[in-house]
Image 1 (spheres, protein in one colour):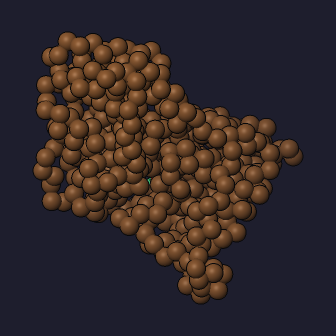
Image 2 (cartoon, rainbow, N blue to C red; image 1 turned 180 degrees about the vertical axis):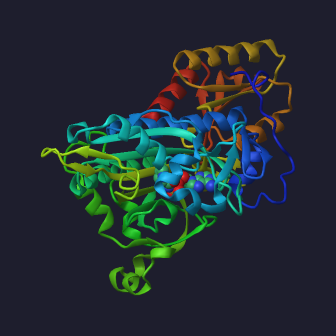
Amino acid sequence: MRLSQFYLPLMKETPADAQIASHRLMLRAGMIRQEGAGIYAWLPLGFRVLKKIEQIVREEQNRAGAVEMLMPTIQQAELWRESGRYDAYGNEMLRIEDRGGRAMLFGPTNEEMITEILRAGAKSYKDLPKLLYHIQWKFRDEVRPRFGVMRGREFLMKDCYSFDIDETAARHSYNKMFAAYLRTFARMGLKAIPMRADTGPIGGDLSHEFIILADTGESAVFCDKQLIELAIPSKDTDFDGDLQPIFDRFTAHYAATDEMHDEKEFETSVDEKNQIAARGIEVGHIFFFGTKYSTPMKATVAGSDGKDIPIQMGSYGVGVSRLVGGLIEAYHDDDGCKWPMAVAPFHVGLINLKTGDAETEEACSKIYRALSVAGVEVLYDETKARPGEKFARMDLIGLPYQIVIGPRGLKDGKAEVKQRLDGEKSEVAIDDVAAHIAGLVHAALEYE
Ligand code: P5A
């Protein structure tokens, strides 16, 4: 992509209410634009990161055996009256009336709708188990939308729902999502720790929040340091096999959010040197709530003896849009973002130091084409801006590699390469630079 054709409206001054780094950087780097309280437009650069995150989430859901679908954002109040949540959900629900006076709402979550969908199609115990998910916008009229996309009112969530015949089978579904989440966040470069959590308006009594540690996080959390170093289940994990050992390994150490925290247990079960009392960002939350929805909504299947059995359910959420902010909190410095390769909006930034100079332009075009052919995503700065401005802009948007081409280097047959993550610079022969960088990019995109 040529920068002159892209839309990258950088901001010099950020609004005073942008209190945390990720919010400021997303505005400054032209990733989002605020369109209302807690409502954001995703500008091209931010949109690319959002889509990368979404795709990793999708791949890991599919690997775990979940099946993708898409439910609407607008729901009928009637469904929520069936479960009893229409009134219980309170002011966080955005209620709408259509022209016929029917009560509608913008979905804050989809337990009711998916239960209605499954109840219509699954009749026998042979139709279970099922794991269904979608990636769809939600609306919650939060009291205090803040920190940009971190706590928005409109936000993108992946929500998966499990349907099982009994509690043992439901636990297996829970474990599938538990393991899939460990993989999902690790692939993005995040250490997300599963913690015992409160279930709030979703319900049930088994629940884990996946938390990344960050000083700017909204949750107070307590855990054992050893959790940070545990090995993540690998690509060849058999999701139909026994996943209990994975669950057991990650729940053997103390980890709880504020609401579930037991100070006494924490102090007695965790070595003092391993005690972490910190703040964190909730990037995912999984729930097992049994028949909380299936009983009132009469979602049953016929068992092998012909008797009706209420379906055992769970739900599993990932904050896809929140993760964009969460990733910046984990990966930035004073100059800007430092994207891990897997979620970077482009893999490489190519800087032409002397736009208008025929030789420099030809060298850049050649590298640009070679990288594109090799499947590398390049943002090519061929604008007329001053070099200083180009460097600052590239640092701000934080692409993992920068290739800098100017007449001086060209004379020696050299390109300068900078790695954004550690700031390390090196010189590479101009004829080799495309292949060299393509190799590094492809290696960084590989995962376990
Ligand atoms: C699980 C899936 C649920 O809604 N129902 C379907 C269950 N869980 S949850 O914890 O309430 O939300 C799941 C994840 O969504 C993100 N999230 C938000 N992101 C941005 N702004 C918000 N206001 C917001 N609220 C929730 C979180 O990452 C949460 O873990």
